[in-house]
Image 1 (cartoon, rainbow, N blue to C red):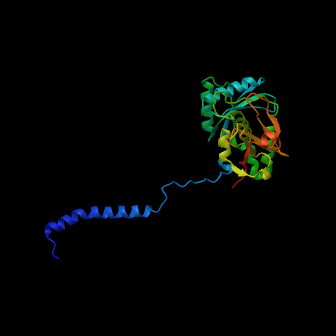
Image 2: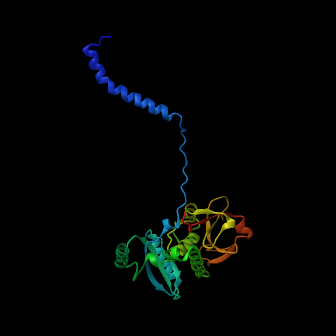
Image 3: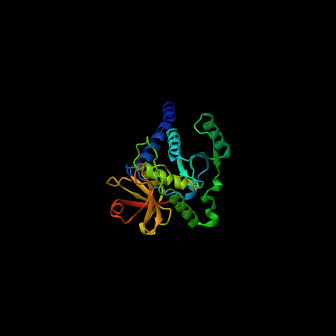
Length: 267
């Protein structure tokens, strides 16, 4: 068949359009067999190395726990995960921040010093934490250190996050403090701690693992504690109450138990 010059010109102009249309039709056809519902992807829980704490700022040396609590609340209002603890000297000190380098930690500490938020400071190095010795001394060493740290809080009247609307903020604050004092930077709320950790069966719990509860009914995570062995756990029961040890076998906690998580494995 003889093609005129005009027809040949039209075909040359329209050919790219037909080619694009053909590709689009092929792609549409290939996708038509796929489900229109997005597929949910479950991410594997991170190892403890993913939660390694960097440099931390330590401030204050208070004889009155309320002064330490007040500084912690001030820092919390500035968006920092701050907590107070009883030092081996018997004084209460405050730690906050997670900085990747000594220079950045120093710069931030000096800023808070100039602003009058703190009056002095000490920088805590990552290699000073129990986590840094885990490879050398083993996982059991880290677990024992976590439990010893949690035990140091027993009897302390604790109160975190006064301005927060998050349920379980005090109990998760205790967990965060215990883990940070040993070099692990966990999420701040009990709900986040539950979803970020690696699931562990109740009959496989080890010291330092976390146990979670729905204390307000339903299945919503509102409480967390640190497993202490022998079916017991250390926790902050309610706002302003003393840190105490309770049993997983008690009717109250057994009926509200929602599961356990660990942050201490490498896989």
